[in-house]
Image 1 (cartoon, rainbow, N blue to C red):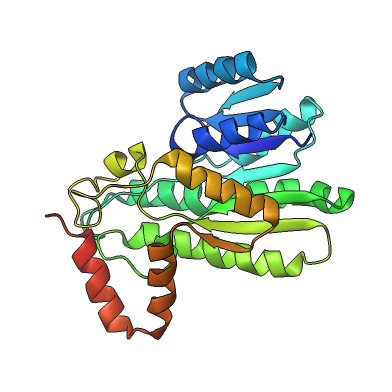
Image 2: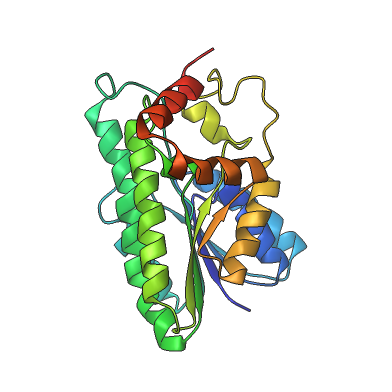
Amino acid sequence: MPTALITGASSGLGYEFAKIHAATGGDLVLVARNIQQLHALKVSIEASQKVKVYTLEKDLSHPNAANEIYAYTQELHLPIDILINNAGFGYMDDFLEAPLQKDEDMIYVNMLALTQLTKLYLPQMVQQGNGRIMNVASTAAFQPGPTMAVYCATKAYVLHFSEAIANELEGTGVTVTAFCPGATATAFMTVAGMNESVLVKGKKLPSAAEVAGEGYRSMMKGKQVSVYGLLNYLMVNSIRLTPRNLVLKVARMVLRKR
């Protein structure tokens, strides 16, 4: 069975991706900053599934983290058949007020580490003629986001990068999926300060398990872009026909606090 490497695996979507993959009988390499949560997940999975789970504590905002992850799997002779670049974060604040270091960390985690890991693991996948990569983008990738300017820009990069290399890899046996969930009931909303936004407050959000299940299925089918939920799908496609100034006004409205 294929071995999957999942970043940001200690909670939310990454946690659910790990459980879904383990249920298929595949081994796991789980990466996150919270080693205690990773260890608890490892114990839980190995107790319920006949798979091996490796855990690695890494902060992907550190410049050499991707190389260290790759070196770890190489030392253990672990072929990575599935790469799920799930780690990422965002927050709400006007760009003028946000600390530069926080923006730089977001760019590193959401874009650079994702690109580095893809570059490191892709050659082996192409060589063996089989592989799956999922890059977790967002419905935020489809429009600018006032008060989340850098976050939306990083997710636009993930979407466009993934689509481009998916096209380049046609015929190799390796597929790349840009998974674009909308607002989801995870700790991301709290960390990003979005619980009081029009987008989130008072809304019944889909669970991480529901969203992750759709993402995993899309990846295994080799779908290039997967948007979770019919309303999200209609929204992101309607943006293409909507004047840009109106798109900005709507984005500002739903991201403001109630």
